[in-house]
Image 1 (cartoon, each protein chain N blue to C red):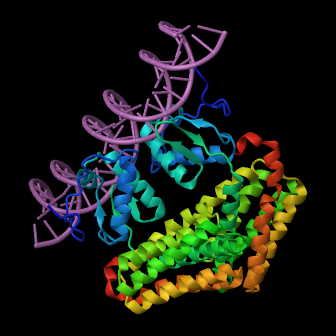
Image 2: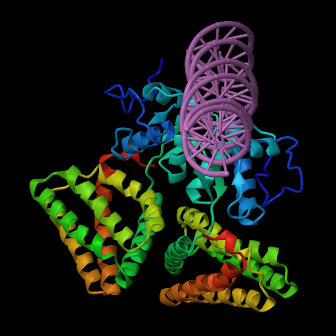
Length: 238
Length: 238
DNA sequence: TCGTATATGCTTGTATGGCAGTTTCGCCCC
DNA sequence: GGGGCGAAACTGCCATACAAGCATATACGA
């Protein structure tokens, strides 16, 4: 029998003892799968069988199927009718448009942030940046990533752009995925923090043009290592 | 028995004789529902029961459920666990962010269009605009709408922004919905066409700034009648 | 030996039944 | 007559069974 998940053998049995109350099986599976795909536990090209995933999470095929529908809308998986479902390979064409879209959306967010911004959230941003700075010094990549997500999320909610933020999140997963392939050194981590500070400074000054410029620069920096990643993992691309 | 769809009584039995080959029941139902919601056949607040819809389209509840999941991701319906599913009401907060997002995305598209544009599609745009101009003269609102969609789609594909266009479509449905409530006079129709021409002219001249400005102006024009609609249909909003 | 037809094991798609939470309405008690 | 309580009917959620399409291996024939 051919091993269907040869690229990503699951190490641990992910059996859920009892589903936490208030969390649907569909949502649970969707979250787990999304995380597994972004973290490259399921690298691009991995074949995903509804039945297999269902067995792994100890649920029926139906919640798995519905989770896959959600993920396919984001573009993380590609379901081919009657043939199979695979984790989407990364195409430069796709990643390019994703970058443009995210840049456009987050630029709009910071522009709006320059017009009005929730002062409470403004304060929380400072603590987020401090946390991230400490993580950058100690080289804790995981903490950096979560702080990064929190930063951008706080920016969006502070500017009252929750719906836009939802859209950003949907495209962000793709840059997060390639980012998981780049091992960042301490220097790039600290430039990340300084770029964040730059954005906040511009917003504090109500300088929309500067804020937008800083954000665009920041977002382009993220995908700076794309060509190197493409060379290192050619099978993940198409 | 309480009439669950009091706001939107279905006139015609939408029984599908045989599903066209290559079209899944899920996709069929999703398309039908999306159209019904945008065209205000199912106005905001309409209660949608999985079972009822399934019976109406002569399919089982599962495809209906999966279609509703897709629509809920776009934000056209809102499923409340164990409680029910309704066509989302229009909130000014939501429509505002949708406008910002669409503006940001389509601005990015025209900017990219100024850098490079498929000449073949460039030609097709001319015919689209001619068709739309004729429709504007005869006052055919339906033809106008389809031509409008074609125009924006051609812009995106010509600039090689298919993925971004997909995102635009997902937010466009919301502006389309309020647009179906505004009865446009012949004058606004013709300004629409002239605005389209303006955008194309700027792109032809490779003037990114002008193109972006024209697009932003155009998109803001669309929602000009929002306050009037809000006053006319208060129950559709929240 | 090569090409073709067929059988088999996979995949996703659809239908149906039962379950649990939520709301609603009517009855009973105060 | 008014208020609390309980059963019934609704909802979406999940599990299971069946159907249909595709891919590959295999057997058969030229």
